Structures are given as C-alpha cells and as structure tokens.
Image (cartoon, rainbow, N blue to C red; front, side, top):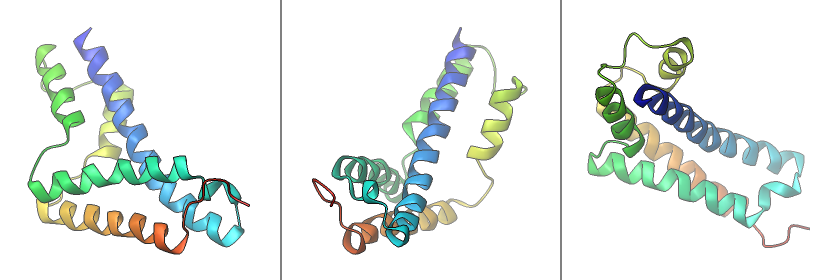
Amino acid sequence: MMNFLANALLVIHFAFIAFVVAGLILTVIGFFRKWRWIRNLWFRALHLCAILPVVLEEWCGLMCPLTVWENALREAAGGKGYPEDFLAYWLRRLVYYDFPPWAFTLAYTGFGVLVVLTWVLVPPMRKPN
C-alpha cells in the first residue's frame, strides 16, 4: 500500500510540474495567439502560487515536501525507490535530474521570474474581453 501511495504521489508531483511548465508556455503562446482564457485571473493566480513556493524552497535550501513525502512512503514500504514499477521508473526519470544544486536554484529562479514577467506583460483580468 505504501508503494502505491508513493507512486500516486509521484504522479501528482509530475502533474504539478507539468502544470507549472505548460502554464507558462501556454500563457506566452496565448498572448501571441490572442487566447482570452490565458488572462483568467484564477488560472494565473494558481499558476503564480504554484511556482513561488518552489523558488522559495530553493533559495532557502529546503527539499520539496512532495519529494520528502514520497521518500518517506518508499522507505515505509521497505524500499529505496529502485527498482520500481514501470510507471514510477519513467516518471522519476522525467522529474529528477542529476545536476548540482546551484543549477536548480538558477533554473527555478529564472522560471519564477518569467512567470512574474508574464503578469506584467500579459496581465490577468477578472473577465477577459
């Protein structure tokens, strides 16, 4: 059961990352394509609220709570994370990389700056025209 929960948490983690990355990409594309929905205040606020804790965690040297919980669940299941089932293995390879910590801080900070910049250049509206 613990391994199942760890795998479910990995899927949630991956979905979170996909939302943050796709949200920025779609906002930029939507600006040029004049998509009204990208100016939706709820979408944009949720998107901004998703990236800000990631940037703050990196600057404070904290580990992502989703990663901490997943590791705890894997240890509770008696494992170390590998080997694991197909889905978990491939999602893990997409989510985690072997870079020095400063590279993550730089990448997350830069990404966060881009998200904030879209608020300035493509401001959200309560009711897009």
